[in-house]
Image 1: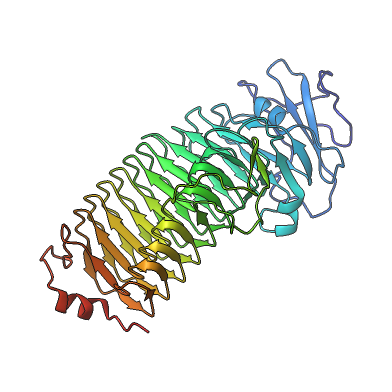
Image 2 (image 1 turned 90 degrees about the vertical axis):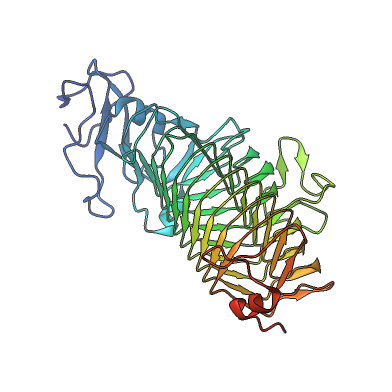
Length: 419
């Protein structure tokens, strides 16, 4: 490798080291470069020609897709601050794309992949594994039916320390994960101000997918259903240690205009749909069985059902040790459970949720049979009754061992102290 020379696209490579598979090589470790040091990294095609260069601090960074096309397994690509206006696909290559410092918020904010409303900004659909990593970027301005920010189909990349904002589409405004083979790691990202015209404004996980979703901040996202996170169609993710706040399901005239103002001709200054819709923080539907634990689910709103969480359609999640507070909905402000669902609700704090009509804490309806144990439900408000718990005649409440509970014991179990 020769340092300090500009390698023009298509020019012969000056004394470049390549392996037999044609992967690019670096004569330095990009993770150990001293801050501010100028180093050139050339990306080499199998025929030995350069396809681009990346210089730390360069005001005109080269395209990221070129680095992917030239790279290969177990390789790294370091990208300086700048706006990269492109959509990229990993094309089955398990390489790490990284900003100069994924731990520095200012660097992440300054290193932008802008999709230009031309599709999903980042796509994984080639069977990538956890070694395929985008880290330390702001991913924005994607427009796609599924996964406008990041689309993951049958792949398992690692998505870490990114800001994913101002993307929009039909489902999975920021992140969309689909398929039985999809087990990505989604960790330490800030997912904010994304839009889905149907479901999953922040994230949509469906069709058997089983990602690990942890330590993310999911806030300010819009959708008609499941505005923070939607889990659907036999999905079984682990969702833990996330902060899920201020997401709104069912956009109406009162929605604060802090998100993207226009999405494919839909003006958010007018209602997207007059139909009230459910699931402000998390919506779990369609025979899904996630583990949802140790999350803060706060100040989310569902226009009709499930301000904090919705569990429906034969779903059986384990909802463990979460703080579900200050959410609002017309019915079931904390958790709405219905449609033959049987979640385990254990060790949660359900606090200060407000229902406009009924069930400030938990609303159990339509042949639902939740298992309740060791929950604290305090200070919830309902204007028409059921401040702590509302159970309809077709449903029952069980203890952790599946024994039906009578109304007198339920409140002891919940440790309810309504204000």
